[in-house]
Length: 166
Image (tube, rainbow, N blue to C red; front, top):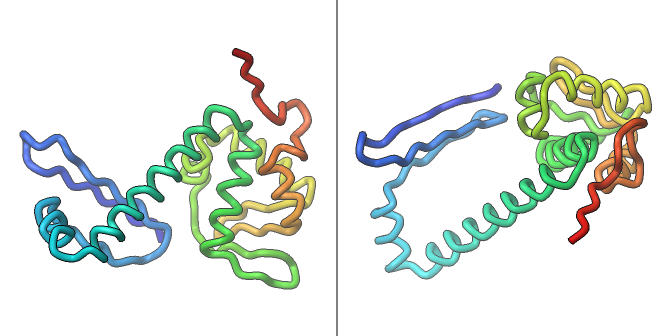
């Protein structure tokens, strides 16, 4: 199930938090002051917070680079491999991803439009690489999906990489 929650803190405080969960989960809300106090007295908490921040920054940078330099099929393949890593179950038919996502949500995760997602997912289905169905996603050919992700297998009419010359 998809959970959406947004909370705004005060009128003078411009911070807003938005959480979008793909599965049921518990959310802990802590103030910045409480985290700073805890980190000041517990080095394990301080290290964990620093590590978490570094991982989030690295993931954000990779996502931005993907949006700037990868074509949509590669971005969608990246999303599917990440979903498979977190939620996939290996079956004799392939990897089954039991996460309910709308085409709009999946398109947003891949940084594209629903229309483009539909075209790319149709190509993945016709190539028997992956099928995006209403209640689940199937990856039939993992190696082919990885080839789409790294740009060695491309959708006809789409380029594999953007070349930037300085």
